[in-house]
View (cartoon, rainbow, N blue to C red):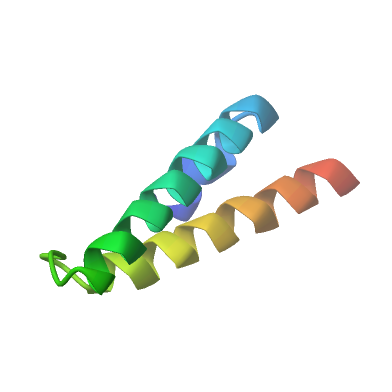
Length: 63
């Protein structure tokens, strides 16, 4: 997700996306351990997206 897309989301949508991405990250870690992962860069990308969502959420919470 890009920054512009994230800024347009509501708080509920951000929470849902964070939950979904955490589940995806959990599955990616299992795939990595079992050597089944096709794109290892996806793990870092998912972590960064979660961080972006949390940052925007904190900004909306303070505003």
